[in-house]
Length: 304
Length: 330
Image (cartoon, one colour):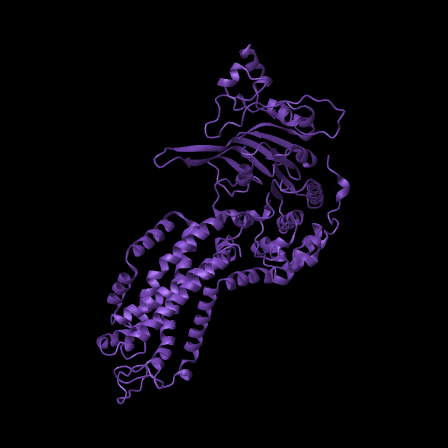
């Protein structure tokens, strides 16, 4: 019943090329960019984040005043042409301190989220791929960490480790890890069942190869989205810890520490609190909106 | 004829636990329920049956992607049925698979040359350059162009992708290829191309195939021996010609009568099976085919027929061909 004349050589007629679709390398990224740009708010947030990053990198070049030099002739002055965001209780320029603090704040929150992402991804991949007792241990551990309110857990960790920015990074990383572990575990569970993973297994590939070469690439978009969503929370948590005196030293130009210092003068010089507060608010908002936009743009189920 | 078969399967069983509801008791779906067959070197053995009869599960048991609950699988005389993942790995070089869905079985993020050479990367120490060269040769062998090597799988048609899958299976020169419905997802015209390719490769490389399909016309084209499965068990195995000329089991007869014959003048009796495939969770008592069998007897409802050889190389599980049982029935 089958027609032998169609192709009876092993070399076969070289199959024509016309079935080939246009090259995809640009395709996926272009689609993503088109979908992302359509979300105006997320696009604006991205611009603001880029601005923050530039400020963090070039901070010292941009500050109008030395952020650490007190000026006892200009104590607690409100916003003016000379000091756009006013001065604090030592007469230091608040705008300069905010600019200088950007680097610190971003460094703390980004490194905390990065550590959480690396740890959480490893745990999630192992937990999802191997299942069994390993999965149970990792997931119950995550549940325990999840059951604490974020900040309370961070306070607890810093209380054990002692105050200081590096301990804030550890604390924020610890409470960020379970969310990565859970998300990556669920992606792993679904990718593990795909046919190409089974095919790789049938070839005789080692687990490490299956996990890193075949499963991990499928989790990357989830990792990116979760990173961007967690940064806002990490900034807030780091600022809160500093505000409570558990993070940055009060001499450091950390946004949270600035809030904390300004608190005492709230009734006479509210601008000392307003500007750091506003900056934290905008930064957190921008990262959250950015994360939302990224999620929508990377989700293939949402059509542009 | 007395050489050890490449693959020998004896009393293979696999069941999957299914749980209904929150406090429901666990029940077992007997996907494969005690099947035995052997495949000689260089032979094509086909498993046919309706969807859900356990043929794909059998394929995965033979390649040990699944672990059997009972029975054994012998590959080149070695029992592999309970080997660990790590013990299996070196053996997998000799048994590769071709999958039904050429869209899902190729990682969309990998270039064709990396897809094709992945088994080589896993099993040998060839350098990247040598692997690329090998991949190009393999692509030519399966009728693609070595220019295709830098592309991604999604840029190809279904038939082309299946060729990529075959090139991949071929890359480590396995002795056995388990092809799980390799042409079911393809157009009929492409099906014949791929089947011819498989046959040519078999001649060239001395391959042994375990070919899984639901389509008897496809199976007729490629097989040496055929096993017919129904509800997790083999009901008949025979040489291709014997099976097509002289099918014994009523189920095989019904299946064969459903194959279209390209001759409108030929009048045939069409056997239509009544009812649906029973659930493999609780298979019928006695002969598992009795609920749909056109020649069902009382005894079929109580006693499961043994899988017996009725003539050399022709085995069937049916009371109709068991004289003692027939005497009892009368």
